Image (cartoon, rainbow, N blue to C red; front, side):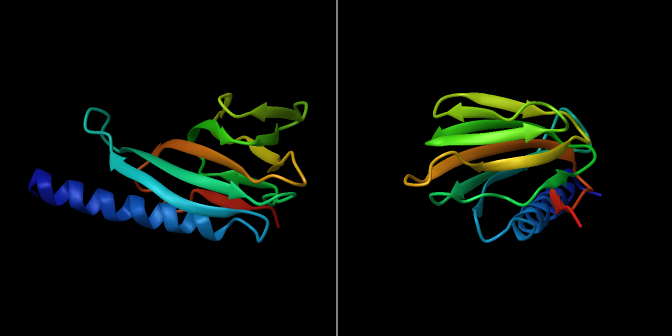
Length: 138
């Protein structure tokens, strides 16, 4: 198979993953695809970024991410409260960042303000064949 064809297939799979991840979030947030591309020097891995916009008082449902996903999260504006696994709930302000290891549970992800919106950029390094980035708790 030609390298260009392989990259096209991987990109389509990545965009599907971004769409699947957006569907798992609730009415308290809005997820928008930002970027997705196969990592050329790490076969089988894709870098995918999504913007998560929280209205005042908005939140995501408790969830887990794709099993292979390493996530870097950067607060673009406002402030985000986050709790991963059994760790403490922390508030991250615009310009601050955090990460999630593969397989961790994200119990709290919400806007820290009841009056101002907040925006988070989540960057995933994930196996290219994983099509669901986020799965809400049952």
